[in-house]
Length: 306
Length: 289
Picture 1 (cartoon, rainbow over the protein chains, first blue to last red):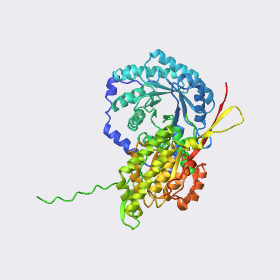
Picture 2 (cartoon, rainbow over the protein chains, first blue to last red; picture 1 turned 45 degrees about the horizontal axis):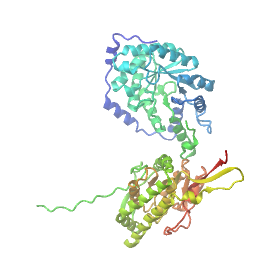
Picture 3 (cartoon, rainbow over the protein chains, first blue to last red; picture 1 turned 180 degrees about the vertical axis):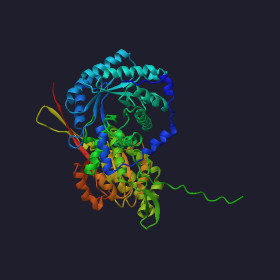
Picture 4 (spheres, one colour; picture 1 turned 120 degrees about the vertical axis):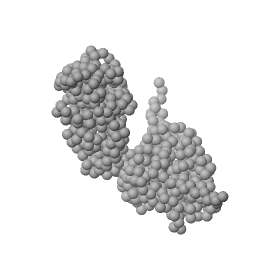
């Protein structure tokens, strides 16, 4: 259910405190230097694997590729049964049926992008139909994009109403709202869009589509983690965060986990509340995991090419 | 007017050569390098196992591009390395004399031999296929062709005691066929290797094809030999570690060239160091319509 915001939405969002840009960059950079080793590293790698939304969002996606990726999502490292499955598989709406069949009974979630991903430049009717089709085909999570044009034009009400309408169509499925922070220009806008999405009923706020550079960055994720922390303190409802795009190495992933722990807190260190949207990241996590167990560096020859 | 003081010397910082760049060691460490007589020459970067990993990543990244070039073009680039070395002959001669403790004339001769070694292997680049490949007679309606292909990323341990000529003699044959290399320089005399890296960097050799690390052999060799993304090892300078490194290499079935009684002054080593780092691809092609 969307919250009721007293007064005008615009006045509310612009009443949020401004972001100290230099301070945020510095804090993110400081936290990125933290050293995570041995047993802590092992736990972090396994947690990161469990948080991965294994993603394939290409025009060239085929049913075969989706099935292959589904197999990988359920059993990331065929040579090591202790490697946990990932959180979810993320595909385009037309691939949901294929993925649902492949993942049936595995416990791995099935996310579908919707609402005219990645640009979102379609009518509300099309967006709602897109969402309903994905849910009907078996998606348990919907990743919607906001209308950045409307947001930047100051039409916050339109963005709010779209999220509310899509949330209604999701039914049981969780709704992740993609802010596409690379197009929002300022950190203040990231904070406003985060609060807007949460008030409109988002279960997750997600940084990017992965189709726009810059995609996920540490400072942007830090601002969104602050937003979900403050939102829970204000309303009692917990919202998740999903950085996506550009996270390619295990080192990057661990930096995000440090950020989650320090900014939002331990409650968010769980695949139910924090996800990493990525495609190539999983192989690096598995290679680092293998390095810890065998003692020597592994190589890409030993993992699937996605 | 006050006396003008003599100009302050511009000292060189000897760093690593990884991915076409000259980084310091990730660990921030360095170690003193001395001449055989015990005089301090300079500090060299003391690479760590993470530098090994970074170098392997750089070499792997460079492999498709380098192996995909025409053999003729690789030969041209190796010849260009010889040109660049020739242009810095005085510097190489000085460093070789200091590192090996030999006379100026002997150092000049060693530099000449090293430059000639590049020219020699530049010539081999587009002749390997003719010598090691060919059409095989088979009993069936097929063309059957064998073609040598580079093995991949090769870990090279440069021989001790021949910091320039020996190093070139093991590096050049590895890269001429299209492999990329992670080379660990002679621990006691790494300075000529770093200066060679400067010649490599200015000679059209793509970054990452040759990566040069300086530091302790005992620290760098095991992670390199055990790395699953390294396809072959040249143990020329592995010394007493050779057996241990061979065992590590066996875990991922690497090709290994054992250290032998090598004479770096041999001007015509032939295919002896090229062939060990090649794979043979055989193609069957039907004849007829």
